[in-house]
Length: 152
Image (cartoon, rainbow, N blue to C red; front, top):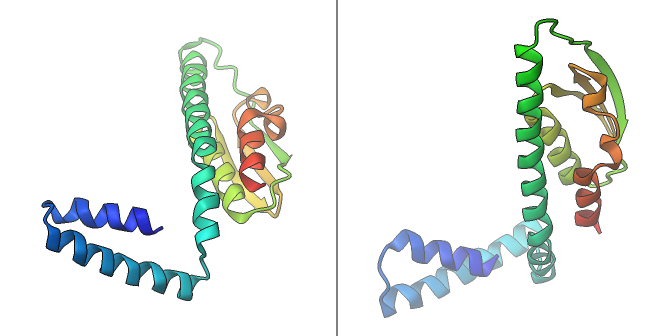
């Protein structure tokens, strides 16, 4: 957290002088100490988050690919003459234990065209989709696997 706060301090100041750097070191140290005390963070948590950045970047790339792919699927559905839409509700058991990873997964489903997370109940999500095959195997897909790695 400290390097991020210090970098933010330098960016927002717009100038790089000895006084700004020195004052920034003190201010960001106080802010980081307050955050550690008030919110229960620790430097170990920061290091753990830093080690997960590659997984989060991979997750973002896979999600963007899925969104683009789903957009083309929706385009085919819209431009086809028969509009072969067979809406379905499906219950997906994610196996995710962290609230944050469940939040990411539910919103990723909703961001993908043609699917909406209707309800979350712990590890189980109720998902509405325009076609059943849009979410088949989602609980063991790449997104879910990356989120499970992030939880470890």
